[in-house]
Length: 258
Image 1 (cartoon, one colour):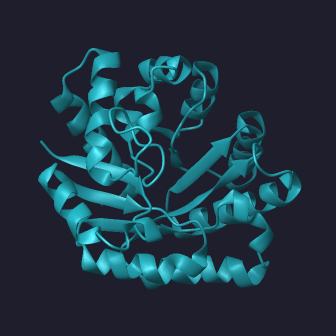
Image 2: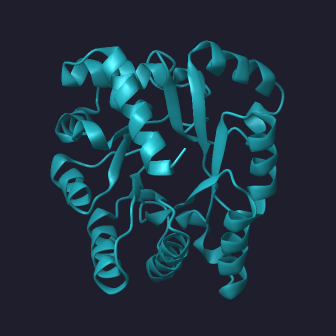
Image 3: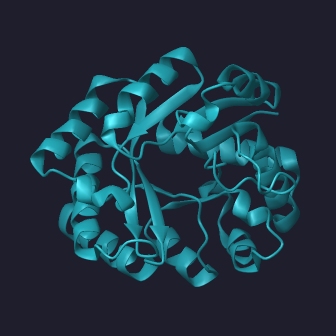
């Protein structure tokens, strides 16, 4: 059985002391591909080094919505664009999107999101979308972008929306990725959403070091724990673990062209 973790942040300091052990565990768990997300283009060099250190690790480049105030117009636009062009293991643009839970710079976030959608379309790469308390606005932006600029593809990462919101983004052609949140007992809405995602649009991730799944909740998350997300999705959807693993692996390889 092979697995893929489609969203990790193993460049964070929390992994500084034991990354070799962490990587040994993900390899033992059957994870033979990972996608390393990027929250600011300035961290891309460290992510690129990791992608060279670990052949199974691919990466993205982008600016997180909670860092929207760091956008410097064409300078940041070109930084993301050129970084993506410069390295063959860049498979996506992001993570990008909207986060209205922690940040009230809504207009700036929307502009930065639009600009990164433009980069992704220019390079024909998928987007990794962060969306928190902003589903309606984000859907509207995607609809407008598609109407004005054309098709865009990507993933709603660490998805926590309800089934209605889930269907919005499925209708726009997005993949839906579930994290350790889906394993939490209180996550009934997320589990309901996991039931309606078509098998060819389903993805799994850890978003490590955040949101460790049960039974590791409260600890540092790591890629090897993605197996628990797959197990929970198998339980929810009445499918075998092997089926979920293969479906999500194939879907990720197709979306990210790896």
